[in-house]
Length: 215
Length: 215
DNA sequence: TCGAAACTGTGATTTAATTAACAATATTTC
DNA sequence: GAAATATTGTTAATTAAATCACAGTTTCGA
Image 1 (cartoon, chains in turn orange, cyan, blue, green):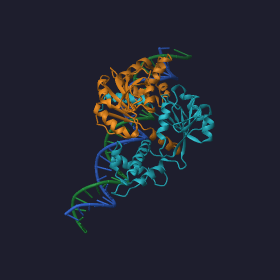
Image 2 (spheres, rainbow over the protein chains, first blue to last red):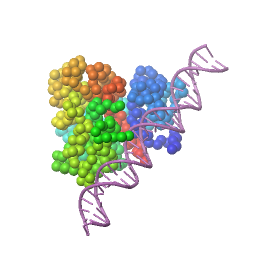
Image 3 (cartoon, rainbow over the protein chains, first blue to last red):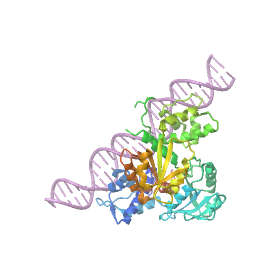
Image 4 (tube, rainbow over the protein chains, first blue to last red):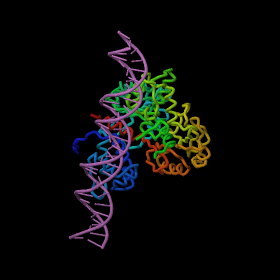
């Protein structure tokens, strides 16, 4: 396996996740005026080891000032080059109930290359209102709005019983990435990147390990 | 490595997650009157393979009627024996903003051995109200309520800037499992099971793979 | 200026998770 | 009732992820 610094292979999924997390800590460091950071410091801010941090950073081909730690500013920029699309990506939140609003407000104010352009809902009282800073469209305008605004990522926070149907519409509308927060597993074509997160499963897992601790 | 059906070792984390997911599909099957299910059917309902399903089921020591598929009822029960605590576990949701409410309402009506007993918030207008079916207490009564109701699991959905402090209080109050939905990584003692989920990271990951598809 | 200390970068190793491969068993078909 | 088929349970192989171990810098202290 040969890796150069010029062309990137796609990174391991876990590494991508950690880079996203590192970046946020690093931005925090910048605000606090910290200019350099050691691998073990960054590790301590997250739940991992210095080696893991160094390996992740190795993957993106950045190297530090030896013995001074990583230059925080530079590292933020390099992570940005990896994670962000140059022109940014447009995002829609589908279903603006509690979860949709939670998600949307999380993003507000965060400078980011991801722009929440639209939210969608079936509830007519929400339509055309601005919710959490973003305009709400009726679901039946999904395809039109996705196309005209070139939305490539959708966050699915609709009730379980409409999840599959809406997902199909999203695929049809040409979405490229789908984050599914419903409890219904979805099937999408291979070229659409799908990630699913199920809160109930997470908590059942916590409960299991509370009941049966390891070693 | 020797595994008997009588005493269980703790299961792989991913297996636990999948079992939780399987169970929900299986309950759905029961409602539809389906009494048996093949490994490949269960696999198709999720995003995995028949082998994976069989391996997961092997882990919990259940074996099917050969060639008839798994007995749905039995399998649900066996998964329940693995995942659930006999007497159930009590859960509290800390921070009843959008995300806290989303989580709480997800659980309402789901028959489950996990009981959301209390929610907590600092907002005095919420206190003593019943939100999403659960009573809201002031944060300063955390320890008292956790102790008297024997709450062992906490769902942390407070704003980022109070996350660490509240987490410390939860540990102090004797919580056994903590599900952290804030964007702040937490440090808790080893005996407290911690799971963290960060929406922003998830979406940044989706964005990365939209930009750099695999193979 | 030399040696010790503090970090990084990375090959080698280990561990965990997934997938392949297939024997064993039950069912159906003729 | 023998052969073909469908399905499980499990061992072995593979792949992915994390960790170990250590050589290579740079800096510091005497």
